Image: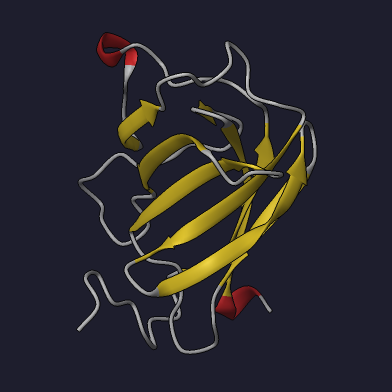
Length: 138
């Protein structure tokens, strides 16, 4: 069983939209609601490159894997069987040698009234949350 498996729950988002902003992790004392953990790899540049490879998912379910450019948006999409999980892991890699620059975990808060999740327009490490869509919106 996959943790937080939202299969069949029409209130769960089947798309989350982000913009790659190239920012590093916030200081630990500045980590707020929505971001569970964030690690900049040793040797990562002071600002992340203008283009990187982004992977986002949880366990063995991948909602996005592709090349993104600074300022461009990308969409996490359900795989048809699973809507987007409450927790999503991101891996930001060099697009040429695939060296890991940053890893972070976001709590979107979609299936809980008590957990403060991500907020539209708010930046979380190297991404800014810019939108969502639920199955019942289609």
